[in-house]
View 1 (spheres, rainbow, N blue to C red):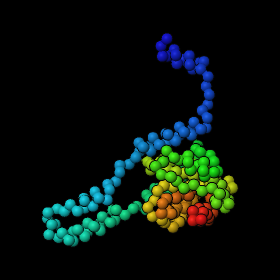
View 2: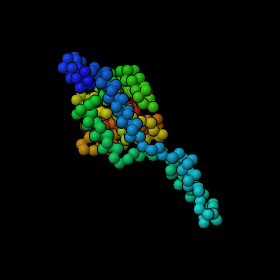
View 3: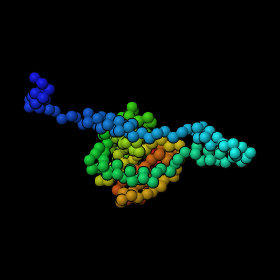
View 4: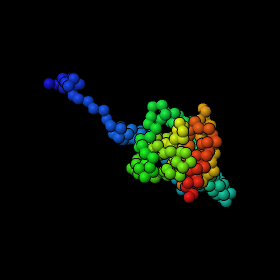
Length: 226
């Protein structure tokens, strides 16, 4: 019996059982992480390497050493400063990811309204621990549905799913270096609100009215300060 015969027999007589939702969620997560790893961008040079490159002065400019060093240090400060403003394409990418999750899923890979279930689920799937809030937001009408890992600009990113009435909210978050005040944007009819608490950068995306999404962001910020 060759391989073709064995394959034919298995197709004809082997029983098939659909995979459970838990197994499918794990497979989706692993595929997301693998895709993100393959798309990982080349790391940017550290500040020491950039400063060293800036201070490699051509001999022709050696006589103006003090001036050149000052210019180099100024440029180094610009390069070393954290990039707080994301790419112009990021809002479009976030909206597209949210639409895909609504259309074909998954909106969340771990389904729970309990942060003590959702937050531990991210362990081993990300290199940071996302913030998860449940009861304080639920009191304001925003119910936690669950969470998932999303490949965003080549990096695995935490996404929390919330619901208010029939509207879904996707809350993306990743590490940040400085706090920023909330800012509202709009793309293709979807509203976005972004802010940072100094530890995490947050982007909320929804078809909610802009004022209502701002209320969600305000409730989140207030809950974190309790």
